[in-house]
Image (cartoon, rainbow, N blue to C red; front, side, top):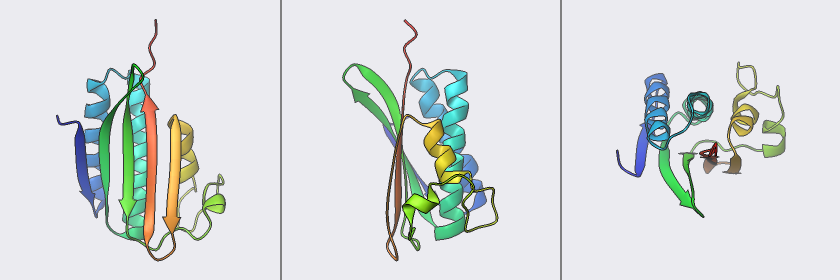
Length: 136
């Protein structure tokens, strides 16, 4: 598998594909089974948002190597309607759809680093990182 994989996103099946690709890459990096589930769940949340709100976008997965540690970076981007109030969108329980409102704040809790950039009318980019925990 390459150091970068991008998956076009436009339907529910792409959520499954993105989860699988994320798990494969994270597994290759040596993440624990628990972390594999966390990464796959965070990917599901951000990709589901693309499908529901923007209708199409892409998810890119990259291997990170930084200062002797390794990890995965997940970038979800779309050219959808954007998020008018990021602070509000990041509150637990807030939803403009018909979900539980766990998406973005849930994804943030599951990953080590989380950044969201959004411009109304232009789209949203969510960047998440998870680092391999060395147990030694």
